Image (cartoon, rainbow, N blue to C red; front, side, top):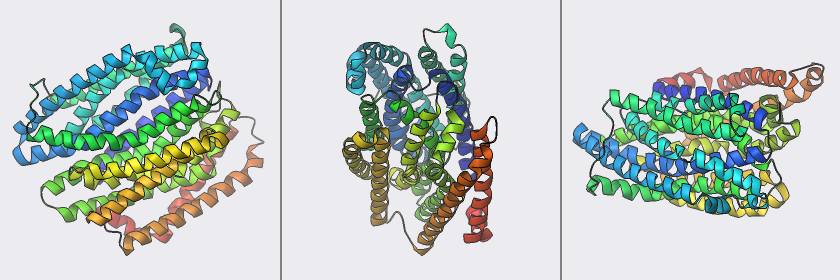
Length: 509
């Protein structure tokens, strides 16, 4: 399990690093103005649908069902099940694509109403979204293939696929002069990456089991079970995406640059979410599904417990850094070219607000795994919908005084409510035990995080006069210094409070 986590996490980290290189190019070329805002709407729309129907709901319903059929009745039955799901998935996504392309002006009026005051920006957003939206069909098939490979305990290609998105966008941005605008270049990069990711996953799956084929849909017991799980999973996955939709809608009424601040803050926030939370959750779900199918309840609980500890171990440094020195991080990463230091300040404040909920962001995939592994998608849905109701209500209340920072704060509160409800439901159902050892470990992680945050804040404050004497790369030098100090302080604090015996036990399982 640990080896597979590091496989997924390693490729995800590489994806995030190339993603930062891509975002640095975006910030330098697009900046934080009207063209950038139009592109980010065009990027968010297919990504929202992908997160709801593909990576979110589909994985939650398909992976346990496919693992169950494969484990109980063998490869032939599993292949027939995959063929039928593939056929239904392809048809539904093709229909959605046709509707979206035809009704894109109406969709833009609903999802980015603030652009109505600027006809040129609205027209650009419609044009760019029509380019990016077919990406959804391709990435949905990539998700299906990736789910099948994960059940086969092959994680590398699915984890590496998103690297092509970053490479493709950087390539088209480098050739931006050949396109009508830099926004068009970035949009075409998104679409091209969809084909590249499809080829990668299709090639891997064809070598290890064969690609799904079109088959006559039949609502047998397995397919009906899949759809019973898919409905609540879709509603549950919509929780976070509705919140992001609300951010997009509300931010279009804010001054230019608000959408860009949300985007860049979310991109940094997604580094630990993807490398840690999603990577661990991706491995944990098929692992628990396999263990529960074989009747190993104790092993399933142990797997989730280890997932929690790994998640906290790797995410605490990000929480401390994003809360204490977000402005330094933003300036070092993006403040160049068309992206000004004032833009970095706005994005940094937004990042700090998102960081309040970084722990629930990274833990939620592991927290819902015991429900999804038991084909129970309804219980996590209840928690998600409760969190989103609070989230949206707070967005309306906070946006006036705090602009996009208020939107991020509302998202943070909603995420905490979602996680706490899921944990409460798991404890009540007997899927999770919060014993003295787990409580003590959480308390120690809090203490380590406070110590690290204090060290980072003090280093940034007292080193600033010395770094100001540098003629160039002051922010980059400050970030490098903070990384070095943070690594030393965090490593020492973990050893002091947890000890080497705990680390060895965690790694051994």
